[in-house]
Image (cartoon, rainbow, N blue to C red; front, side, top):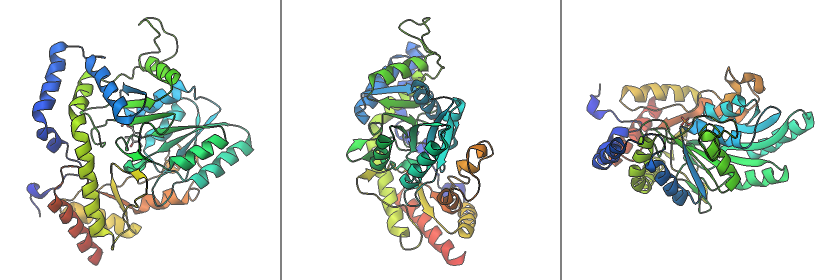
Length: 382
Ligand SMILES: *Cc1c(COP(=O)(O)O)cnc(C)c1O
């Protein structure tokens, strides 16, 4: 048995904190001292910094990635009778938010090579919704799974031809870019999450929305604070409480200067995995013009080997994860909106094959090599 010292962290939040302890402690202390815990000055400062970072005209902090999606959907007046097209191979929030508003998620298959929404299947699904004539196809909620932007060029082309809107669920991809543009500036509106384990995380729940559209920004800012208008007790629309905590904003501000280096290190870790594993397992594909922030480094293995690999690596102190073991169209809560087993074959197959390896900016080369060595060893015996 390995001792604890040899345990590799799947995501190492402590290493990150201790590398910046002074700055982060100081930022938190400053909030404790000024006492403006709700919508304190750090929230606005962070929003300004995020707007510069992404190139989006408006960046609006909020309470989580899920609430970020909700703010977008509420501001767009998504509701009963609307079809929102979502990939099935995603985190539950992508499907949950349209449903909370009474809209219908239409599950679309993904590509086996980038794990993101398949534009061929997307067009098929839009056409079948139109042919049925019951729902109005309103928009496409694309997801940048594992940190790699979806194929927005093709998605936008489809959206334009069907007069639909494109939104981005960029919870995993904040910091990535496509065609030289940062995530957050690739769609009419994008949502991200600052959940601690995401590439840019705070120390609790947090999120943000991004848009260039002034009206949408105004609506989302209002909905974030109970639908208020100019005055606090002037309620002009139905809203929610989805504000970002001042302390979380302060932590994110303190961490932002590190983020570019962290992204670089994530890429360096991915490069080592690539070179060690490419001849032996299916490694993540790279795409010209699209950079990833490597929220996950996800390999594909034959299903029987995948499950054993997960168990065997764990025994050696190497944690791995299965994102996602069940696609959304097969989830109990959403099954009524899908067409069952066999209907989205790529999503179903991926859920049996994927294995995400430890990846974070504080992994050493020797740790990455140790994970790689262990995988290669196991492949010989499984
Ligand atoms: C994490 C995540 C969310 C939700 O973010 P929270 O901050 O946890 O609410 C939404 N979509 C995707 C794809 C995610 O990975």
